Length: 95
Image (cartoon, rainbow, N blue to C red):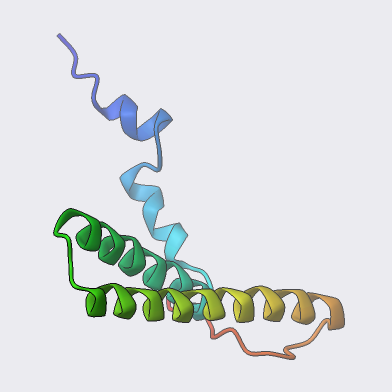
């Protein structure tokens, strides 16, 4: 009988060979999604462990960093596209 689990990679998400193309984005966008991942992990830890208020405050500050980074990245993408030049730097993709 054939194994069917590789179909999950084809139809349910990215296949392993094409995952490398997802990392070829600007450094600012990598920072946004990296901090977002950390934020979700901290929020989950805070809820599951009934963490202290100081831990939750730290998580909130990390969320602010993520939010401000997302605002900067979005604004930079719009302004760079609008003016056709590099108005706000986004960082070259790491190859």
